[in-house]
Structures are given as structure tokens and as C-alpha cells.
Image 1 (cartoon, rainbow, N blue to C red):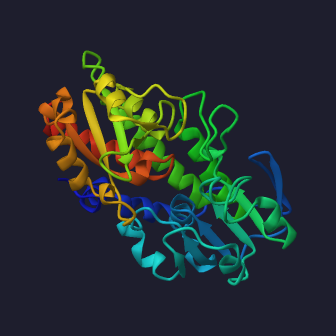
Image 2: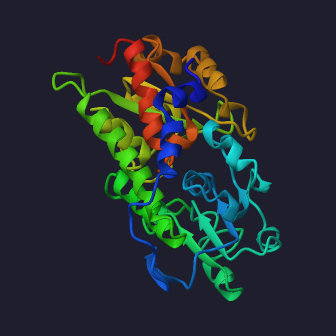
Length: 341
């Protein structure tokens, strides 16, 4: 099994962090700065001094931009911090790896909260709504990648009518870098991701197979439905980036699908998530693979019989900075399986 840490070392994230500290080549932010963010106008009179990264992706973007000295807390980590960001992250207080309370965040006297998911700060959040932070004078910024409609799907994650792409991530990095007046660092990070994306697209063989994928995030138990990556989310983007497609056709961001449905989808490759949290036994990739190989019905899926099982960082299945690393991770394993040149 390829470890995520070794993959990132091979992919050169250290070089990316070095780019983020490169000399300035982008213009300075002019305050007051007003941004339109997920249906709300957010104004900054100056760069934040006491930020909270609420959700792994938001926290890791702030760290990637070298802003650890401007951070007073982080929370909600499905996976461990990127290895090359560990030293910077150690300087920032961890509020909790799960969902924090509104009061625990306010206790850090923040002036800004960067939010990865609407389930953390949104109309149906159990933590707080954006207006709750507005009332106490704390600005919020929600990831553009997760501003989804819940009209057609009655869950907090919503649905996506079009395939997600990296442009929304680039927008997020760019706007956060503007908010903190480090636009030069933001542009360096974006340039690196664009180069990685272009390299992966260029590596797709024109005569290669259009592989179908199922991206299995986790399940509460073997008998429960599986949380899988929806058609148009980050998982669908990875499949498309590698010249294939998502076998799951639901537009919900995180549909729950019974194993009968997954068997019917008949994927060529099953990608299982590796998660560092300890919520469910099936968060572990080894537990997922054991289930796939031993369940009487599921073990008969051709992908399982052909051992076309790939392990990927679970956070890469969310539209995050890890998505491109996840695509690189899958690519290396497909090559080892002989499914990609």
C-alpha cells in the first residue's frame, strides 16, 4: 500500500511550500476589500490577525499560505495534517478534530473564520450560522467549492449539477490570499496546482480504457449503505482527470448507496478512502478491503476479483487542495496494477 506521506514526498509538496514563501510578484491588497462569497458580501477593513481554520481544507490552505502566526485555532480534521505542514500546524491550537462548539471558537477571540463545509457554518449547521458570527463582528468565508443547493437533495451537503473543477479551488486560494494580503503566495500555490493538473491530463493515453470508478468514503457498518463520491464532486473530477468516469450517477455530493446498487454499477476500479479519524471501523482502508474480499456478494464484483482496489486519502474525495494529490496517488497505483501506462 502506498502511504500518503511517501506520495506527498514524491510529489514534492515541500517545493510547493517553498513557492508559497517566494518573493512577492503580485499586487498588495487594497482595503477595504469586499468579496462576494456564497451569496453574501464580506468586507475586510484589514488583514485578519486571529483566524480560525474550521475544516481541514480551510486550515490547510491557510497553513499552505504561511499564515500559521495569524491563526488561533483549527477544528474538524478527518485526516492528519499534510506531513509537510505538520511543523507549521503544531504552532496552532487544535480545538477538536470533530465539530467544535460556537462558544469554544469565540473563546479564542477570532476576527475571521475560514469554513470548509456548510455543515460547519451554514443554514442547517448544528454549530453556528453565518449570521451568528456576523452578530459578534467575526467575518466568515465559506469554501466556494461547497456552496451547493439543497433544493433537490435534502441533506446538508447538497447536490452538484455540473462537474466540479479546480477553478473553484483556485478562486478560494486566491481570495484567501487577498484577504490576508499575501497574494504572491496564493499565485505561487495556484501555479503549482495548475502544473500538476496539466501533467495528469497530458498523461492520459488517447487509446486508453475509459475506466469507471466508485469512490467509497466510509460506512457505519458492513450492513449499512456506503457513503460514496457523487457523480459531479471531487471524485468525479478525479475520474475525469484520469480519462475515466464516475460509475455513480447521483448528483448528490455524498449519496448513500446500497451494495446492490454498487454491484449494479459494476465499476472497473474501486477507490477506498483512508481516514485517520476513529468514528467507524470502516474508516480504515484495511477494513474496507477485507469487507470487499470476504462479503459473498460484493466479492464477486469484477473489480474486486481483479484486485483493482486502490487506496486514496479520504480528504481528497472532498473538493480540496488534496484532490490533485489524490489523483496522483490513484495514478501511481493504477500503473502498478497495469491499468494505466
